[in-house]
Length: 188
Image (cartoon, rainbow, N blue to C red; front, side, top):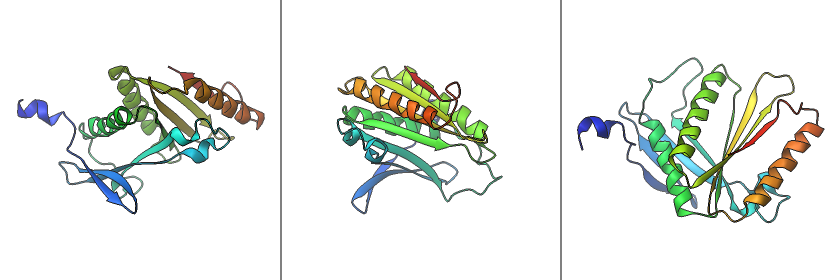
């Protein structure tokens, strides 16, 4: 493998245990440290006993956090690293659904939405074992949105129950006053 092709691959990451749980950590060529973690997501589906225990949330952040207005130089190796961690999780736990949720409340909201939508679209196209559910929830005043993406292995045995739960969630949002046209739920 040439150095050039290796430079486009993911960073090496390691699993680190902390307080009874674990996270994945890696460092970029520019010396920035990233951590990624999976956490219990059952509280989002507490009324759905059949599926709640198979839901985990996924998050990642750069350490230290960067202040508003400061942007790191684009690093093409961060995306494949994050997606490699997601892929490993879905392959290791075929009955686990990974929920990714992010809000767009700062001046980077448009870029964040575009970036993560592209990452997760590519992820699903590259890994046919994954189904994706996506829900976009605007705030009542339209100033920001919450994007929820769920990655579901094809081996997940409770997909229909999960779809029903998400439809109930969407209906609940509509009953609280959000317009149906702006609360979108997509199954792919």
